[in-house]
Length: 358
Image (cartoon, rainbow, N blue to C red; front, side, top):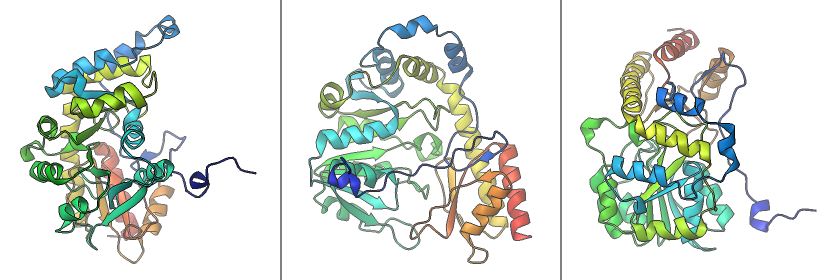
């Protein structure tokens, strides 16, 4: 006998990437930052006393909101801290979408999106990328005409790494009638020369909500801390009505503040990753492997039919290197590789050379 709601009983849950127990494994499968969090984060963690945990944390993470508002040149009322970016996605659906309302996404995209839609009882409008995993020319028109209540648009895109420019987001927000959520989980790794910054748009568009996370750029995936930025009227019902009473804990708030306070350190890791991304792309090309231009901390790579993507994934795993293989249409002939440290990237290339016997 099951007590699940009918829609819950019928869905498959989100399948996270493998988390190996051995420290010997080179982990290039879940897009973590290969460099440790800042020394200030480590120092802050070491100074937390157990007695401080007796009391509840700041319900609204006020210190973090103050810091983030100064970093992004917005007001604290424009910020909603959450228990990772995933909680923000769930809160957005809870707050703005009723049962049978539609969520629009591109396909493929972050595989949690459909799971959250099914949990909420929303219908799903999927705009497929073309056979080369590019956005269709009419992507904006398709999203606007979808009649969706909410649109989740990951930018830079996952899993391709492609970037839609600020002008596109600006125009889409003007025309889309629902809540436009731009998931910027990977925006820290965008080439600064592209001048990508959508934050000023939240003052122009009351329906635009940006998602940020400390998981990737700040090396704090194990902490679970993210935040949203938007017009105060958009943020307010999430912050004061649908958010859990103490959704971010004391330790995560302290470390998140330390991370933002030492942002220059984090930025130095972003630059290292950009350089490693260029190195890895060049080496993959030299091996005759096609990859998609990326503005993230990962690269999507086409595998030849012989030996095939699954074979390469398994051979790398035998060599203690984990990458991501998606057994879904349009992705099952590719692998996604997280940008690692210099030594990890060299080990990966060496292993690929052995697999392909170049």
